[in-house]
Amino acid sequence: MKTRRLAPSVNAGSMADIAFLLLIFFLVSTTIATDQGISRKLPPKLNDTPPITIRERNIFRVELNQLNELLVEGELVSLEDLKDKAISFLDNGGGVSGEACSYCRGSKGITSSDNPKKAVISLQSSRETNYETYIAVQDQLVSAYTELRNREAMRLYGVLFTTMEENLKSVHYDGDKAKLRERIKHIQMMYPEKISEAETKME
Image (cartoon, rainbow, N blue to C red; front, side, top):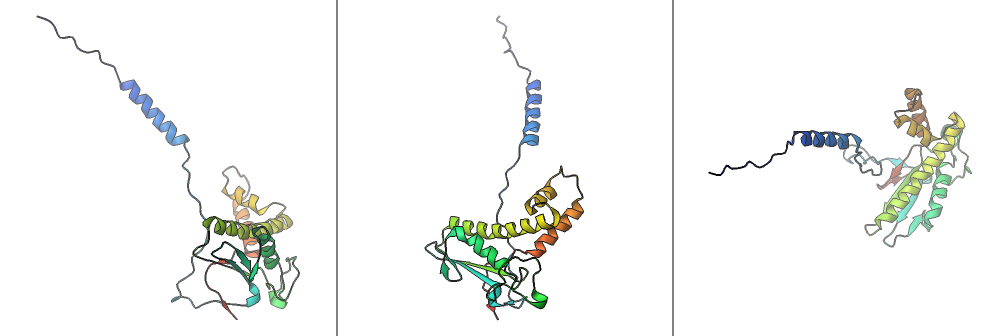
């Protein structure tokens, strides 16, 4: 009578250990990419908050039409010129008395903003506006704030505002983060980012 031979078996215990170690390695070493969008605060409900009245000179009107044309204060301009125009508006410093801006370096024109704290950029776009163009306009407006904040951070603290933000997020920064956070907040208050996509009511 023939004896049945058992098929040779492979000890998979060590392979399971290796697979488990590889799984732990990839979980620890892999960074998960997170999508980042444009940081914006939603406007409050109209029922809860009365509409805010803003002086006409403190509103910088930017429009994108269905042809992806950029209009600033009703005039057709190129995307490359938007940043400089936004800086001129934000840094105008045309206010007097209590509305004066001691750190502004603008022309102090009577038809432009009183103070960066009162200046609002109103961005309106058509439903047919190209998404890439819309994002490019947002980038130019944000970069205007960044340039002004960098300038004041260098004047007051000898370091760029963007570097201050990076240091605050860094785990390797060995300075006083509480003091750094206060400085960042101070610069942000000097040039508060006010980009509104809601309808504005004028005085």
